Every structure is written in C-alpha cells, then in structure tokens.
Length: 432
Ligand code: DLL
Image: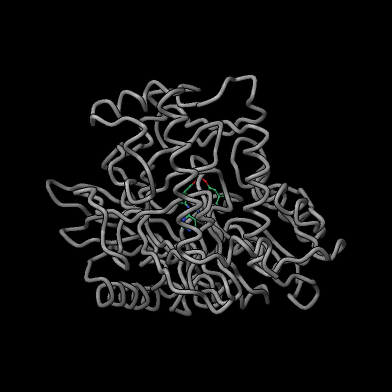
C-alpha cells in the first residue's frame, strides 16, 4: 500500500517542480521572518529573488546545530509564537538542548510523513502498534504515535522502559508492530528469553527501528530473535522527527519524503556538493515547515543517495542505511573506525553478546581504544585460559577486519547497562 501515491511515485521533474515552488516560498519566509537567516544571506550577497529553483539550492548558506543553540530557545522560529502548538527538544551531549516548534500545519505534515513511512514498512489499519519510543521532549514517541493514528492503526502508547510490562502487553493485546530503538528491541528480546516467551507466543510481525545507527548484522539478529521484519526509520528532531525517511518492504535504502525535505550530499570538509552516488554528509532543507524551517541543515550523518526507481514503485530518492555520523568517527592511530563496524564484527561471533562499550583515551599523543564486551552465558567460563583465548580471538578478528588494535576486556553476561532509548556505545575520555 502506498499512502500518497501521486507524490511517492511522481516523476523526477514533478518532484523538482514541487520542491522548487516550495523552496522559493521557504526562502522568502526565513529571509523576512528570521534575522539570523537574513544576516547569513546578506553576508553572501543573496536576496530571496536569487533563489528560483532547486538548482539554486547550493547558493544558500548552511545551518548547523550551533545556530540552533546560539538562537536558543526560539530565535530561529519563523512564525509568531501564538501559531506554535507543540515544542520538542533534543538534549544532545553538551550544553543547551536544541528546541523545535511546530504549527498545526507542521503537526499535520509530520503525521502525513510518518503515515507514509509506516505504510512503506507494511503497517496497515488492522495493526496494533506498540510505541516503545520515549514520549516527551524526544520526538520518537509522539511522532510515531500521531502517524499511527493518522494511518488508522491502533496505537499502544506505552513509551520506553517497563520492560516486563512491554512483553506482557505484547502478549495480552496482540501487538503486531513494535516501534523502538534497535538496541531496546534487542533488550526486549533478551528479557523475553528470560521470561520464556517465544516469538511464536506473540503476534509481532514488523519492527519500526531507528533513532540510532545499527548494522545489518544487528538487523539479522533482531529479526531472528523476535521473528519479525525489522524496518529502518530515520529522522532528526531539527528536520521534523521520525518519518524523514523509511525503508519499504524491499529494504534497499530509505525513501526520503523529499516533497518536504530536500536532501543533498556534501563533502564534510569542503562542503561542496558531491556527484550523485557519492558518500558524504547528508544535508536537508525543509520546504513546508512553518515553525522552524531549516535551510541546508548539516546532519553530520554520512550516507549516499540513490535516485533509481524502487521495486515497490516509489520514485522517492533513497538514502543508504546510515551507519555512522562524522562526529562518531574515531581515529585510532590514523585508522578511521565507526562504532557500528565494531558492532558488526561482534554480531558475527557466537561467543559474544551484542552489548558493548567503547572507551577512547589518549596516552601521550596516541589514542587508544578499549572494548568492553559481554560474553554469552554458555561461553562464560571460570577457566582463565579459555577466556584469554577468546580475548585473543576477538582482538585478532577486529584487527583483521578494521586494521586497528583494540584492548578487549571481557565482561560477565548482562553487566553492560541496557537502555530503553538510544544506547550509549562510546565513552570518549579525551573530551572529559
Ligand atoms: O532520533 C528521531 C527519530 C525517532 C528517528 C525515532 C527515528 C525513530 P534526534 O534525537 O534528533 O531524532 O536524533 C537524530 O539520530 O541525526 C542520526 O544521527 C540518528 N538517527 C536517527 N535515525 C537513525 C537511523 C531522532 N535510522 C539523529 N539510523 C540523526 C541511523 C539514526 N541513525
């Protein structure tokens, strides 16, 4: 089922015409209503009339997270506060949160794009969607909530946490769809095992997982343990929240709702737009938002775009599964490493559980990486020799795949903290 076929299957020229018309309007809106945008455009010698179509996008200045912080809390809003009907915020790691505001129309747009995403994933009116993303300032819970209602499926607004109750309600209510972070899905699977609940005791069939990077190997593990199809959903609060992009049943990239959010791929260093198909930093311009429109917002997420028509019939451009952010990348003695690459190796080893923590430290001028990883119950042993051998095996495997030396520390099963939201995989002591 395609939720909005005329848009989702439109030709490239139709999409570009819609984008161009909306871009022109958005640029006028921010120029006249947001002093910080006007200033940035003036610095580049630009007036709204210089932007006539999507082809002019690259003339515009970029926006970064710092711009939201510098204009905290409402300085980038482009409409009177009386038009704002909802606020969300993301905490981030340092300093003040970034705040976003939605008008009534923005909330409708959000519900529309999430309904499209859920339809892509295979969710139907007859489904029961258990929303185990956090409700509150985080966009995950309420975003999926209203998209589900808009689609006409039944929403179970349990929020994150309360893991035993989650499993009990899944059984009692017959939830068919689980929406949460992939790391929480794995934790739910672990607790299900402890409670002796089997996938066949549940009616679950689809998972709507996102808000953090997760590897293909993690997908396989979740699909196996929960007996479901695990769909990747992407979004960021600054752009709207979940529903910016989502996989369809073919799982070959995430369709971007590009009539609302225009994607670009730029070189993260030179900021020059890259040729089609190159991997680079994903940049979004929102073209329908009223509360806080964003011009060329640098997401820091690394991916590439595919403009080919998908087997599902949709023509919406697809972004490749995002497995890293430029600011997550660790440089360990000159080798670039993403936490998701380490995760991928761990999932391939029967002896380790997919729960890990990376600790980065600096000794003199060298960065060192320590990996704390849980051993599977059946492999955990009192024999020092056996554990030593396992340690060596993991170290060698990571070295052969990634070319970095990691100090592996094996820890007992279930000792690394589980979270109901986004997992924290890296502790960077260089920044402390
Ligand atoms: O995480 C919105 C969301 C909620 C998306 C629920 C999907 C599901 P923020 O908290 O602002 O918003 O975090 C945005 O999370 O820039 C990515 O780095 C990362 N991210 C989000 N979805 C994915 C995904 C929500 N599917 C930041 N794969 C983004 C990889 C993701 N990273």
